[in-house]
Amino acid sequence: MPTASRLSLHRLCLAAALVLSWPTHAQSPAAGAAPEMAARPAGPPQPGGRYVVDPTHTFVLYEMGHYGTSTNRGRFGTRDGQVQVDAAGQLARVDVSFDMASINTGVDLLNRHVQSSDFLNVADFPTGRYEAEDVRIEEGRVQVLRGRLTLMGQTHPVDMRAVRFNCYVSPLHGRQVCGGDFEAEILRSQWGINWGLQFGFEDRVRLLVQVETVLVPAAAR
Image 1 (cartoon, rainbow, N blue to C red):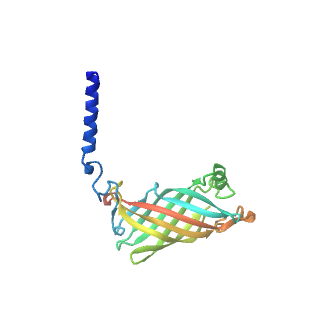
Image 2 (cartoon, rainbow, N blue to C red):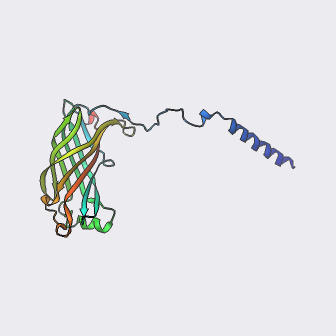
Image 3 (cartoon, rainbow, N blue to C red):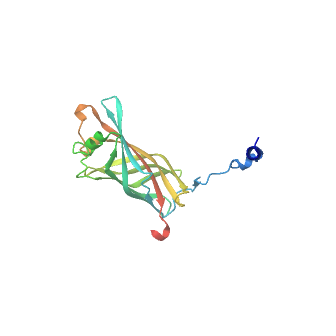
């Protein structure tokens, strides 16, 4: 065998031996080690704190029956919003605005129809809004938001039930984040959204709101 070939083979065997003999603990993180992206619990909302909506984690979704068979679903993005906490650490005000033109049903043709004057008339009413100043809290946890929903220029009372609510310290923001999932049922005809009722589209609509808000630093309030 040529000298160069013997030298290459020797190096290959030596490299393989080093790999096989390398300690197992050097190849993987120690058991139980927390990843750098792990969130930390943060307790309840900060008394007197103001939180602003994180639009990448806040959406309004709807579900509406379709001819008594399947369910039509869509999602709206948020424009802005905030949550104000009083001195006692209770939610005092919730205010979220959402972008009606951002509707996404998964079907472009249906998106355009929902945006039209048949449904939401986005050209004249580009923004929806939910406001609540009456928050029911039991055993330190948010239970119900008693507020009002504005669509198509009309405002009516809507209570949002909390499915879950929690706070944590975000590894991305380095600040406390509070949020949860909320749900309600409405009759869309109350807001003048009547198209399709005569065809079998249901009047009753389920709303689901997922929201996360980030604590504003005291110096910026």
